[in-house]
Length: 86
Image 1 (cartoon, rainbow, N blue to C red):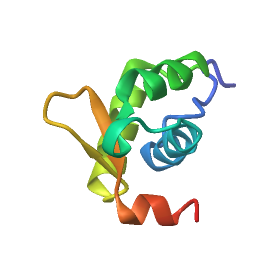
Image 2: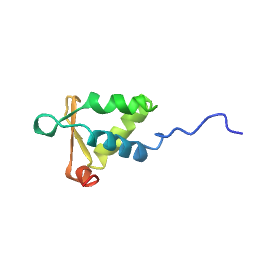
Image 3: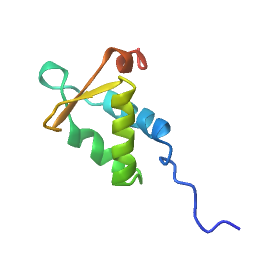
């Protein structure tokens, strides 16, 4: 008997790929920047928790798919991340 449903974004790799899918639909602004609020709000609205969002973003950065500015206000696709959607 299960009392808790499996969370769709509990796996950071799966969540990171979904985060990249969302980011790929955003039109970048100056110098390829994607404002962080443009990807975190849609991701959270899909039912992810803030912790799952953070784990997904950290995973995407660790894999070299995204680069996050030190201020945390925007991300950019890295070549490895862009190749996933080429």
